[in-house]
Image 1 (cartoon, rainbow, N blue to C red):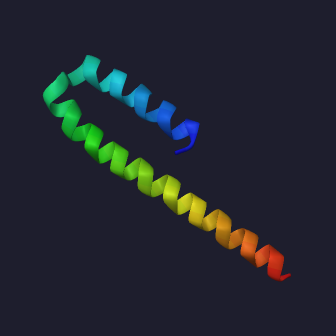
Image 2: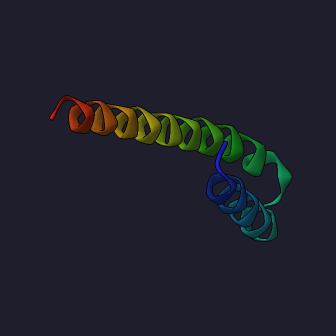
Length: 57
């Protein structure tokens, strides 16, 4: 996982805990982690596709 994603998660977690407390944060956290993973995974896929297209040309 890229460092940017990890920092983003930590930042949101710290902010959320100070705002809401633990119970809701855990639920939010799971959602954020899944979303972040999907976004990072999707970006990596797009990067690979772009590279392949450039290689073909």
